[in-house]
Image (cartoon, rainbow, N blue to C red):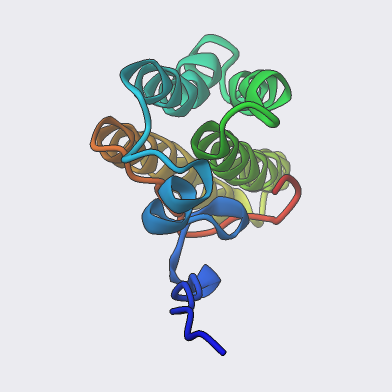
Length: 151
């Protein structure tokens, strides 16, 4: 009977969209980390949300991460986690934006609508910039609030 050391169990609660954190993503792929092209695509994935939202006035921020998820979901765990997190976060923000606009069109809830739309833009810009910086470091960023649609 021989003794074989067991691999440490990854802690899926520690971060990353879809249960991937930095350690687990690299362990699954058997590499030392994401390649430079993966980092570049992840950065563009995170920045596509705010860029699309600015161009479409807040309505299509989820489209870029969704396209990246469809292309890379089976090719790279790092890009799958990054794009799924960005998509889930952008859908959550899109819902906040819609609720804010509905509140603006009602006279009584006008101040609430302004606060929701302001929060939408602040969260959109700040969180995506932080996510892009983390992607440049090879880390999967866990957005603060997201509906778990893609994994």
